[in-house]
Length: 305
Image (cartoon, rainbow, N blue to C red; front, side, top):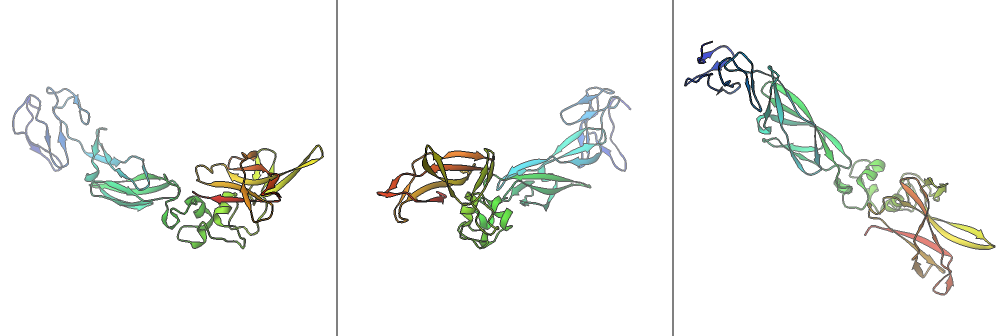
């Protein structure tokens, strides 16, 4: 090869030189790039390109494209991109707009011409697959849409119940039986109460909460426990409480009455009897009197502020 690279062409390549330099001018075309070395016969490299030793310039040919595995919050956008892998083991970044994108599956509503993907809402972390095509190469990008809000999914949104819990028992929305105030399975408890007390809303009947030792709890309706000490009885109201009740925005209020007409909220701090990691069995002592009458009854109000 002479000291100055000369213009030449072949069936697949073109090297155009408009001026002479000591190593061959860096040139580009729609598909290829020749990167000059510092002097003839030596190797040179940059952040994106490398020239092999023994050549004044180098042309590369693409072999494949690769795409990263990404995450995006539900309802947000994420820029997609790819990398071209060349026959000389070098790589070059491809902007998102240089590929043609299409959604194969999953909660991605659209991908713009510039490669900006828009995620939909989900009830749990979900995976979407997007195809990217560059020239004759294609690759499938995996995009995980993260569930960042527990109560924003379709017709189940903003009703106070976690979307994942509603989908678990009632399937994908819409389903009117999944509403917080709805009742099912032939009992009188609402879905909100069933959720708060750790129960299955599709199971008929209403068993009482039970616990064994300090680590076994089975959800159920509130019950009472009478204990004897030194010949005297102590009555306590027992109910199941979700361990994540603060994060779930649940409020439990235990109220007592002597005649089922006048009710008074307990001011006692609940005592945890057992904890299985998801549910707790907790107790509150009965007061002696409510409005001058002996406390005989209790109830647990469940609310979402």
